[in-house]
Image (cartoon, rainbow over all chains, first blue to last red; front, side):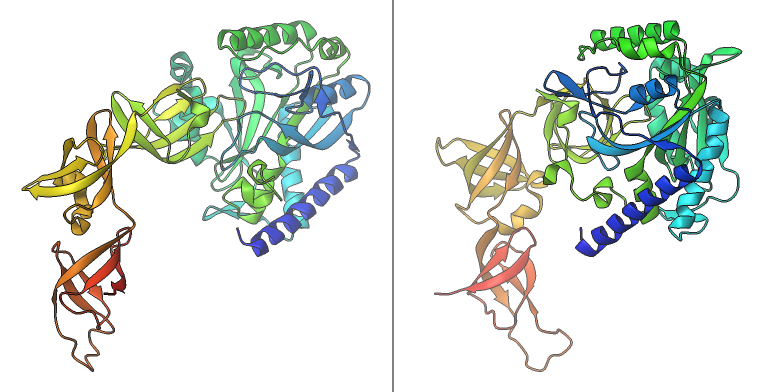
Length: 303
Length: 187
C-alpha cells in the first residue's frame, strides 16, 4: 500500500479512538485496563487462545470486566489488544483491537441504542456527517437502524429456515454466504435473538429459552460488534462452559481450565449488558479500507 | 496432509483423484461461529472451477505433482511428443494441454512437463525462447498507419508485431509469458 494511504488511515484511526474515549468519558464510564496475560479463559468452542508460557494471551477482556461489574463498577469500558490463534483474512488479524463496554441495569435492546449513539458521535467527531461510504454503498447513520431477528433474516435472505439450518449444521455457512452480504446495506443492521446454543455467555430470553438475548451489528455486510444481556447465573454459566469444553474435547481442541474465580464472582454480578466492537473494522468502515491490513501500522507478517 | 488453515492462493491439493490449485481464498468467521475457508479451486486437468467452503478440521491430500525436464520432439495432429532428458521415456500432451505454448515449441527445446502421478498434464516453457523469422514484409518508410511496428511470421507459425528493423531469416527473442518481442539475436 502507498504510504500516503496508510498515513491518512492511521491519523483517522487515532482520531477515532480519541472520540470513542470522549464518548464514554462524557457518559461517565470508567476506562479500565485488565491484564492481557491471564490464566482463566471463557471456554468457547470456536475461539482459540494463544499460549504464553503457562498462561494465555486473552482473547477478549470479557471475564475480567465482568468481575469488575461484580465488585461494584457499574459502567466500564476498555480498548485492548486481543489475540486469537489462526484468525487471518481480509477482516481478521490474530492480534487486533477490541472496544468492550459494560453497563449494569440495562438489557440488550437499550445497549443497541447506545451503539447507535456511539457510532453517530464518532462519525460526527471525524467530520464524516451522517453517512458511511463503503463498498460503493452509502449507509445512513441518522435514521433508526434496522433491527431484524436471526429467524427473520433466514426467512428473508436464505433458502433454508433457521430451524433446518441448525438441524443440518450449516448455520454459519448460510450466515456467511447468504445473509451477511445483505445486512446493513442501507442503514446499519442489528441482527438479534440468536439460537441459545450460539451464546456461551449471554442470558436466555425470558419466556423463550430457545433464544439468547444476543445481537450483532452489521454495516455494509461487515460484522462490527457482538453484544448481549449478560448471563449472571453461576450454575447455568458453569453448565454452558462444561458443554463448550465437552465439544472442544470431542473436536480434539485444547482444553481450557474452568474459570473458577470468574464463576464465583458471577454470584455478585448485577444484571448488565455488554458488547465487544472491532476497532480495526470500524476504522475500515470510516476509511473505506477493503482489507484490515490497511488500517494497522504493521501486520503479523510484517514484523 | 494439509489442514484448512494451510489454504492459500496457489496451494495445490488433491480432491477425488484430481489435482486442484487454489485461485481465490477468503477466510470468514461469523460472530462466535466456526472458521470458514471459502475457496475457488481450479481443476488442473479439466480447467473446471469449483467453489467449496471448508471448515477448520477439514484436511486435504497434497496433489502428487512432479515436474520433469523434457525435450520437445514433434507433433502429429493433436499430439505433442516430448522426451525425458534423463531416461529417454516419451510422453504426449494434447493440443488443448499445450495451448499457446505451441507458438514457441521448436525441435529439442527443453521444457518442464508437469506430471500428476504418471500422467502428463501441463507444460512450462523457459521465460525466453529464440525463434527464426520466416516471413517479414519490407518496411515502408513513412507508413504512419502501422506505427512503429510490423507483423512477422515465425518458424512455428506464430505471428506477432516487431520493430521495423527485424528481417526475414533473422532470429529474435520472445518472452513466452507475454508473447511479445524482446530483442534481436545477434550473430
